[in-house]
Length: 363
Image 1: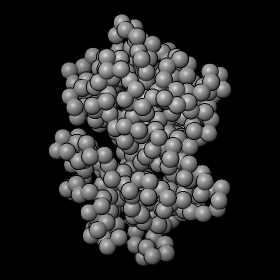
Image 2: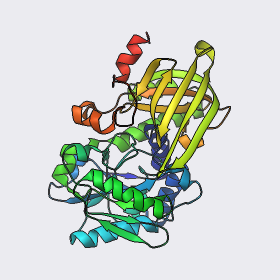
Image 3: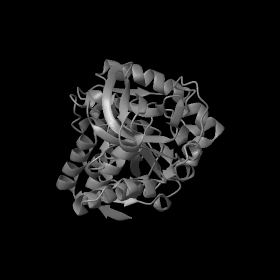
């Protein structure tokens, strides 16, 4: 166990935005919520998964909805507390700790704000190792665990308890409710025992985010480009450098969907990259070549600062570096690819690991 203060939260926010692959909510909002909680309640306890008793109850907390909505509909934090308390009452048991369900600007940091207010620790693990747009796209689902009972809560005070036959139905019903509740809600979801969390979660995601964020911060302080450090930490690959020339983005069916086109610069001059996203970046192509595809991670970094750029933050004229990173091995199983691979999102390509695609490119 260790205590997290303001600097650790600042670093985690940066790393979370990068592993969030463009989604997971606005990192600035998530950071402010966590920093305010630390100011009011003190440092946050971060637990290694092995420190959690096998029979303890763990409940992840998260935001659901389109990241674009949160630019205008900023959560107060009360929504997460309400959802968490409602699920606690439904379970009729004490909750030992919370944890992120995914990596992302809000969804990595929301559990910090909640934990500080509830006097609980946060577990250094998550259910994706990145961000994905749908509730069943977690390692817990891959291992047969149920998303429900779960609670949705909005800023108006509305709350909903769902019990569904499986996590796919949880996604369908919760998505419809989220749209009616204004496009974003807070969740308490996937209640589990400590033993299940240890077996199924992706461990030490928050520490990885902190290491990524620290490397970018130190590069800025020492005036050097952080991209190489980020690639070393994540075992990633540089896919492209360029300038955003077109962005087509809309919010529909509860998601931020769209494409971005990037004109190549430097050694990529004369080429064009297309990014397609559904909250998160899902596929990067250049001409007929696939450079990286879900469930591997695609992130866009500011070319000057190395700071991650979210899908809602992409702007015309932005100079950027696009990188690809290998996903956790759990996503490279048959069920993992069926759940969050290119075929699920309608892309007519076979999943090929990013390291193989970049070998073919001679990188």
